[in-house]
Image (cartoon, rainbow, N blue to C red; front, side):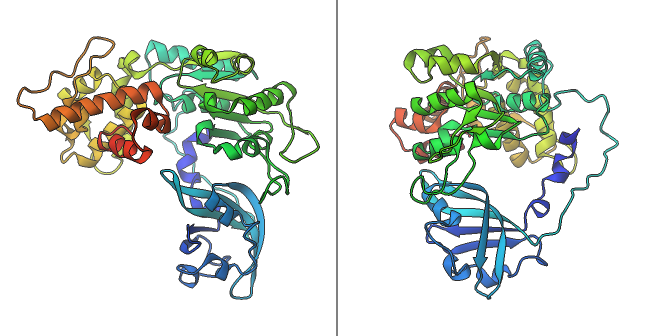
Length: 449
């Protein structure tokens, strides 16, 4: 039921009082108050000023906003600041670093002031929502493979069994994890998704288990993921990228449902459920040592396999229609020409549903008429000719194609296949001998992001 009102609920003005962004020189570059009657200053007062000239009593060693410039993030941190205008401001903030490639270029703080009145979110009933809504409405597809997966999700969701989701990049593993949580008795508690490959190695343990003040330079009392998710579900994507030492500590927490913060002395009870995922063969990961055998068998009470898009071609028209409505919501709806529909159904989709989503969004942006034709699709789809598992091809390159076109065709095909096999962009960039930013530029050029 709640999913039907998400668009009404997720508005920053109901969830926060202000957003502050600083750059890597500690200069305030953006300030947006959502509740001006509560916020004691305006954007014109502080934008362009140094952070510490606005918040006068900030301790650089204890400031979450400044520590975020070194890669740390904080969720639900209480603060009290002396402001430049003599007033004091107290509240709770969530702080995250802002990255560009491998560099941190700033940090963002989302704040809720303690002087804010109590609020509630009022959503209006939508009479178009049917009481017979499918139990997993966000999972688009009626193919036999998807019907089987949906039945498995509903069955395992009623239990507390740990679930391992396997599938290629872009198949929707996080969507499956969220469906398991939503259909479970834990649905009213926190669902915490975390890509394990995105956590800096120096922050792995504190991210999962939290920390006590003084555990390391700049550390504060903070709850880790496993403690925050008490009663709820943790989704750990790319779990095979975790350091083996941290894997061992997660294994112990799984077995005992107890954890100890970094620098702490007492054990904390936490009733969390772990749903994990990987885009590699799990048994190959065990053989190569990427994942501990004992942790794998603890996590994989149930293994759910998400089929690649090329194995559920009957779902491509449904998915395309869904994305058309999502990306072309205004004005007369766009449709696919017969040739475009045939091209989409025959393409091998190495990037799976995510690649199809990107292709439809691209077409919605550039199509000049209400009918989307092949020329409106990303060029790599129409000019590459990779053989798919069903033996379909997009056709050979024209004999008159230039060397530049042929090289781009080869590069697009190579990148799409390597991304499908590897999944981790940083690792793929290293394997190809290029920088991560160069790889991102090429993926963007060919519509593979």
